[in-house]
Image 1: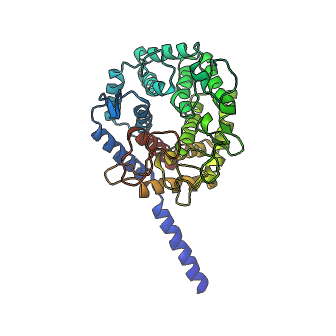
Image 2: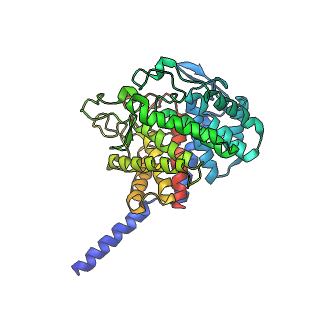
Image 3: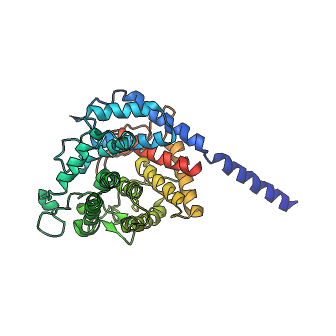
Length: 387
């Protein structure tokens, strides 16, 4: 009798766990709600932002949103998403922010969406300014601040533009997209050379292979420490790199040496990030430190994006990483998503865990767009995993 009761208890527990696991339709419903909130609040995509100063809506924060919107469109082919995107991109003349002679990765981020639309339409105007911009950067060394004071060497570097790890997400996928769309290997090779410079040379190397995590820029490489003496690994910054690896591998042949090189770093990051996940399924703004121990949505969403993708590719063991994905999604829905689709616990713009503090469920970050984009990327990839 005692054994029967135990089995019934276990069965009931299993049913409860199953009932709490989201379905693909559940995920899509939440993603639509979050996106509908954003599109209603920012109904005119051509309007500039006005956070402390006026900036055009082609800035990086908005560009990340469109990455997420295109991911949502892949699983939910709503023409509204395309109309909203094309109105925005056409207004900016399918040109990187600040023109074709900008070498700032933040200015180039919008090009990811331009090239995604080019792939669908083959309309040359969606690509030509992006191509001119990359061609310009590929022959222009970075001599600004000697490519940051803590970088190795004293000469301007042709590859030394990505001095902060956010830049890897903003611009590296553009190079890989251009390579795949044109077949010209110079874009792939230059993008990889800039990635290696950030990884191995900037500040002595921004990627800590031992931990599988990245320092945000040269200023955060040890001896810099958090107040508790731990290394400063910024959650969203690592999320940017993790997402970039996925987006770049999606553009490369699986058997290529470049793909294998990025895959190796992806696996190291996956292991490092898994160790940092909180018991509630979320990640802190500071990954290994007790400083700022609180939920943070954007990093969590990007880690979900990468892990869900890795499971589908067969690179991450499902029995290990699927529970991490399930917990991350359930925690975001429970802890971060409001009934109207607003996202709480979202860290504002900045460059380290201290930015935008204190975070909370109700606090509106300085920019809402990139956080929504991160969430949609994670939701769309998790949907594919469940589907």
